[in-house]
Image (tube, rainbow, N blue to C red; front, top):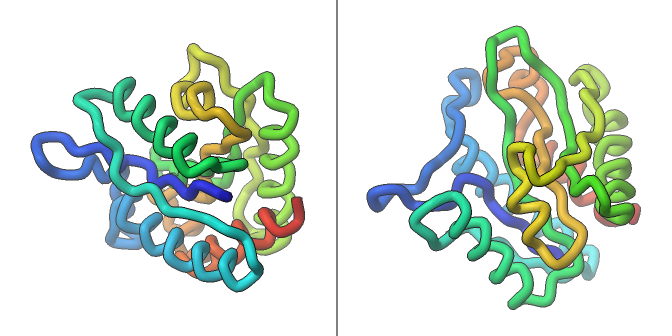
Length: 183
């Protein structure tokens, strides 16, 4: 079972956090990745790979939301957990990167598969590489709290016009599916 977790799915004052907004795609991270997850679910199901989308994190703060999503991942007996995001920074920042827990050899191997597949499918988006995350790093709670190998997926910069011109939810989902099928 693969847990497809949608980043920025914690409610703040009754509304989803949403994450970064891409002016080039005219959408926020959560809404973009809901589309990716829908397509990924279709591709994986067609290939006989069980998966579930988790798109509602309970909790009053970041820590409790990460504990909740980790519990949801464990409740469905996931063997892999992915948290879908995209990056955002100054307009010149670009590229894809794959975050894994620093001591997880399975997480690192999974990140390598995603990096290789994305390089193949999106050769004009800069490869920023794999990022080993520790407890002090941003994103560490999701990677640390999940009981199974997990990744935070950052396939492009929503703030980069060039990256966004090369991306669709379908193209991202296809790359993710191919990476998962290859491992």
